[in-house]
Image 1 (cartoon, helix red, strand yellow):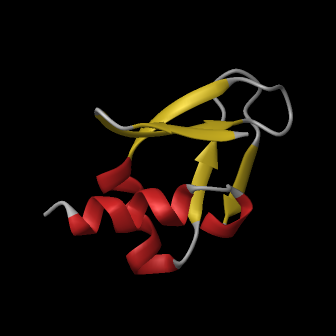
Image 2 (tube, one colour):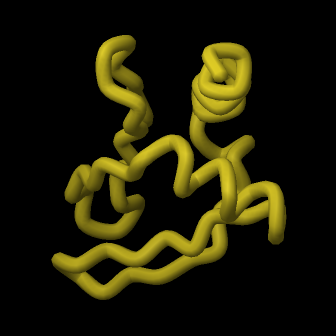
Length: 71
């Protein structure tokens, strides 16, 4: 459902409604999670919206931790 690329500080989230994959910058996701503990997910294809926690996407916490370690 989610994946990262080591040379690209982004994270791919897949819409649970229509399956469209959208890339998000890890730094932006990290800021959202610091402030609110959830991600404001919006799918441009089907207009599905949901407040998602990082725990719903395997690997996202690890990717964010890796981003912090690289600074």
